[in-house]
Each structure stands twice: as C-alpha cells, then as structure tokens.
Image (cartoon, rainbow, N blue to C red; front, side, top):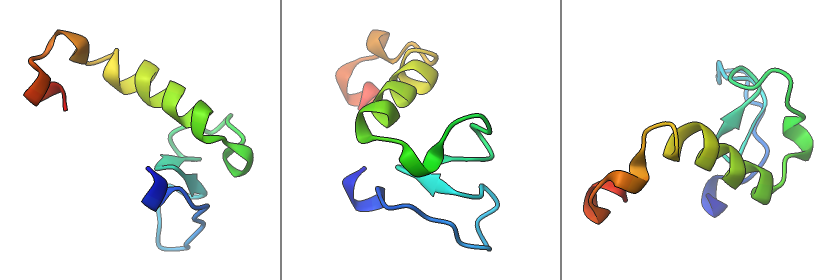
Length: 63
C-alpha cells in the first residue's frame, strides 16, 4: 500500500478521490483526503479479508 498511498484525484479515475486504493465512490461518506494508513488497513481487513473468510484459506491462497 505504500507505493499507492498517495492521494489521487485524476479526472480519468471513475472512483473519484482515492487514497491507499480506497475510493470516494466506494466509500462516499468517508473523508478520503484525511484517511490514515491505519484506517485503510481496518477497512481492508473488515470489508475484504474478513468478508471473504480469508483466515480460513491455506496461507498461499490467503496471501
């Protein structure tokens, strides 16, 4: 995430304002401009890792 951690607001990006890969389009009520890395990690864990039950996958698959 560090290489994609910058704030991005390119007109060609349909997601709108994006930081750490988290877009305003996907999270319209989130303050993307002030999103911290810790908050982004919590969002990824809650909305992707846990939602997909990745902790139950074999380590190579979960990676």
